[in-house]
Image (cartoon, rainbow, N blue to C red; front, side):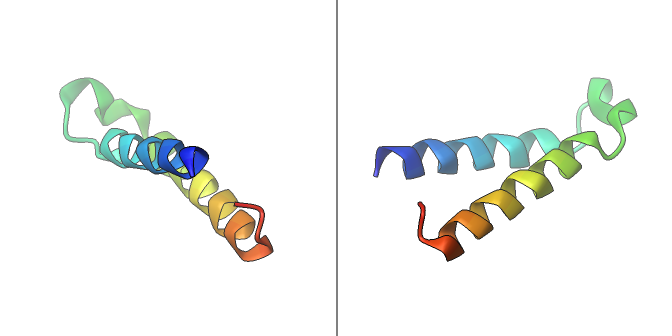
Length: 52
């Protein structure tokens, strides 16, 4: 149960970080949203396999 809470917090932080709303993050490109997509894909695979 604790690992799913940590993963939920991590995904929320990545969602906030992926939004290019701040001036210093406008030049990052697709990096943060691509990382978020990879993390979500891994989580979905783990959930479907029953490992999480």
